[in-house]
Amino acid sequence: MTVGTGVAGGEELLLLVSPSSGNGRALRAAAPVTEALRQAGYAPRVVATESLPDATRLAAAAPAGSVVAALGGDGLLGAAAGGVKDSGAILLPLAGGRGNDTVRRLGLGVDAVETVRRLDRLRVRPMDLGEVNGRPFLGVANAGFDGLANERGNQSKLNLGPLIYLYGGLRAFLEWRGVEFTVTVDGRTSTFTGWFAAVGNLGQYGGGLRICPRAQGDDGRLDVVSLGRASILGVATTFLRSYRGTHLRHRSIRLDYGASVQISANRPLNVYADGERATELPATVSILPAALRILAPADSPALSGGPGTPRHPGASLD
Image (cartoon, rainbow, N blue to C red; front, top):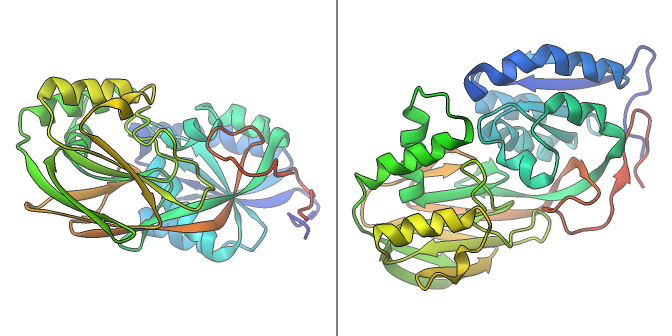
């Protein structure tokens, strides 16, 4: 199957840009990214998205085998992934947000222009897609204290980059009270009073928190990490250790794996997916194995499958 049209003047490509991502970072990067794409042999059609559902709709309408580049935060990338799942297009994730956890975890880097300049080093890789109550995500769906921290971080007007999530966490500490969660993973149910339940596909969120450090984006399963009873110091230590992925040794951490996860709680809580408010509890999180194709390095730390296929204008897939 041939990837790309090979038409004169460059291969057509849809570049989705989120005007709100990263306090305008994606919008500012749009012009240099567009120029880099032209130099790489593409004829970009640039569209500023109106919302996450709009990004999904646009990506779903892209021609099969074409490239959809998404320049924005993790929420935009997850929304675009939901669209290419339906269209058969290939997703190129480009960093344009604050945390940029998806591109970091994939090994793409946070310089969108440099990513485009290195397109010939990327490969088309199959990847799983997560869904929470039907809404697509690539990284993590989470509910609990970390969701409240995300809310407080998103509400802040401070320009702290990835540190905005640390700020949000400090704010949430002042508000949190113990919550009883019920988590069912492939029929196995546990009920506990604690702090959060996180379900990972790529497994990273919050500007570098590897909350599900063993998660792989192409293993066909979800990693479920929850934290039960713990002191405030224990919670803080858990999140600090999660930057290195060493928090699983905490005695109140529970780790499970499965294809379907149901989460509920004894108080109203929002569920976040790729850093965006997705729904309220109760929620069902599921995995769609190999649901999309994505451009990523051959040695991506988040993808354990085969070496993939070289990608450049006019390249082919077997």
